Length: 401
Image (cartoon, rainbow, N blue to C red; front, side, top):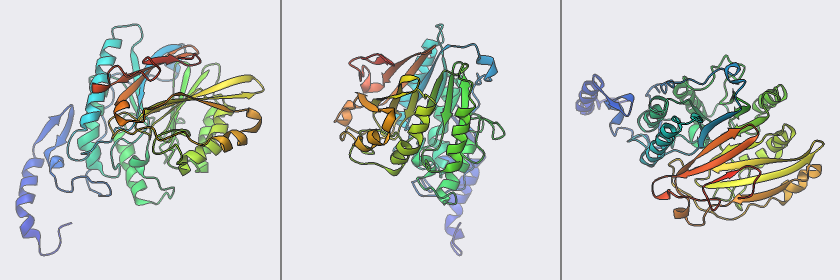
C-alpha cells in the first residue's frame, strides 16, 4: 500500500511497472511477468506480497493411476531436498539449477534404457520463505517446470519449515500463507483435494506406483492428531500384497548429525521418534526420505517383532542447493532405544557426512526398485562429482558397503 500523500513519488515506478506487466518473458520454460523481477520488496524472509502463485506446469508424462502400475515391480525415481537459494525472489536458484541440470542429464540418459526415471520426490524447503509467492514464482517454479517439461517427469514436494513455517498453530499467518502458496504452486502435481489419497487442508498425501506406496506428511506439525490418524489409516488399509514396499518422504529426520541434530534435539525430531517411528515399525515401512540437514547421511534402524527382524533405512538428502552444512556429532539415542522396549531397536550410522562443508556437496539420489531389492545411487553435482559416501556412490539396502 502506498502511504497517503506519497503517490506522486511512486508515479514513475507505477508507470514503469504498468508498462512491464504488459510484456512478459519466458524464463526457463515459465512465463514470468517482468514486474516480478523488480527489486521492489525483494522477497526477503518474513515479507508478505500480493503476487499470485501460478501453478507449476503439469508433467508431460503424468503419474499413472495406481491401477495402471499394479503389475510394475521394477522402476526408478529421484529423491532430494532443500532447494532454497541465497537470492530467492530476485533470481533463479543458481545452485539448485546445477542440480536440476544434472537431473535432466540423468533422466535423459535413463530414458534410453529399460529403467527410466519415473518421477522426482522433494523433501521440503523449496524457497527461503514459502509465504512469499514472488520467491516461488521467480526462483523455484521455473526450475521445476524444466523437470516437468524437459524431463517430462512428475514432481512431488513435501513441505519443510521454510515452506510453511514451524508453528503448530493453524492460524499462524506464515503457515496460512505458506500453505496457500504450496497448494497453488503444486495444483498440477499432487493428488486433488477430493482424492482419498490426500488429507483435506493439509500438505499430506500419498501415491502408489508399482509395488511401492509413498506417503508425504507435514513434519512441521508431527503432534497433529488429525494428520497422524490419516497416515495411520492409509497404512492400515493398504494392500500389502500389492505394496510390499512403503516409503515416507518428509522434511525433519528423526536422526541426524548436522546442526539440526547431533547434540541438538529439535521438537519435531523428538515427536517423530516418539509418535511416528513406532507407527513405521508397526507397518514395516522400509524407507524414510528426509532433508532439513544440508548434507547426505544414511541411518539404519533394525528392530524385531513377532514376524522377525526388520529394518528401516533413513536417507537424509538436503543437498538440493541450500547452503551446505557439516557434521556436528552423533545424536544421543539412548532414551529412544530404551523406550522402544521389546522392539530391541538398534541404529547404525551407515554413511556419515564430512565435518567440513566442502566434503558435503550438492547432490541428489537415484533410487532403483526391483521387487524387494532397493538400490541407492548418490549423484554429486558440480565440484562434488565423484562423491562417494559409501566409499563408492551407491549401496543396496540390506547389504554392507
